[in-house]
Length: 168
Image (cartoon, rainbow, N blue to C red; front, side, top):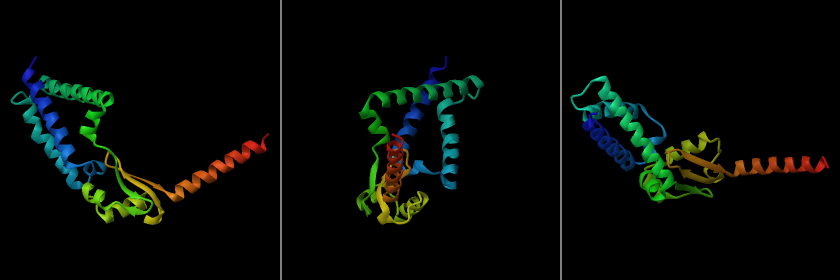
């Protein structure tokens, strides 16, 4: 077995996890054209670092298998150890609370007001003051909870409860 490929692949995997972590979770949410080109070029750039001069089928299978195994081990470790999960994924970040923007967190996440407004509209919320909570999740997506959603759920529950009592 070619242990050099395993060591190289593991090193590149670790570097890529660190690089993505440092780039920020916003970069993970949606891929733009430049992001897609970047990913394609990165994969091409690190390929030789993983397999070296071994461009054989076996070399590729060893590199891919190493990546799958290390990914499985890392996911298992993140499941079992909260400190590891936090080191790699960070935590959700509060962006809006009760219609008020948390400016320092917006700057920390490198999210512009226009991007936040776009996300609010994508969630079907009419305005910022209707946002009860907006969070930048660990996967880079922005979750929005609106007062409109809360009203819809409350109304739905009341109807359901009313039907239950009417049936007795």
